[in-house]
Image (cartoon, rainbow, N blue to C red; front, side, top):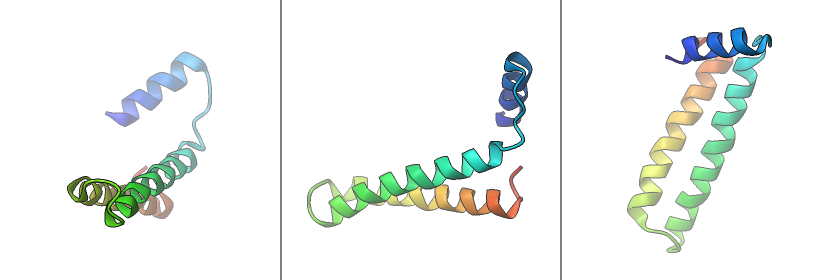
Length: 75
């Protein structure tokens, strides 16, 4: 799971991961924005509509995850 991976990384590198939630939140937002860009292109007819819908759904999940990280309900 992700917690074991983070713990192993910290053990191997000796780095503190106290700001992991901040970076994870940023990654969720950045990827969600990229996915929403493809959804916008699909809505404009420049990408397949089904791909736009799928990527929109994934973006919503990423934004939800980011919100949970901010609220402290994930870590």
